[in-house]
Image 1: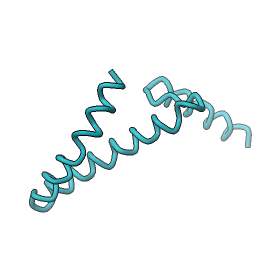
Image 2 (image 1 turned 45 degrees about the horizontal axis):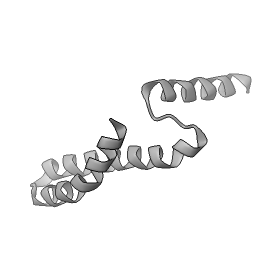
Image 3 (image 1 turned 180 degrees about the vertical axis):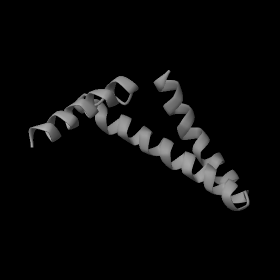
Image 4 (image 1 turned 90 degrees about the vertical axis):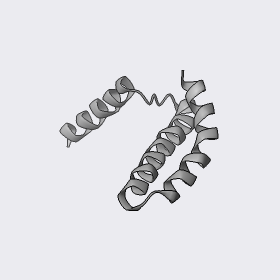
Length: 74
């Protein structure tokens, strides 16, 4: 599923950006925000994979546990 999503996202992003520019005010901002958030997830997935970073709810929970444990050690 992830491969399908990332391949599709690369093709879909230019079209969404064009649509976003054509939308008035807040509506265009919603598109841009969605595009930016998804771009971040896409890049994190690409950069994190070699380091074992898992961009999923379980992976994010693991990162949160590590951060909480470090905070409690202070």
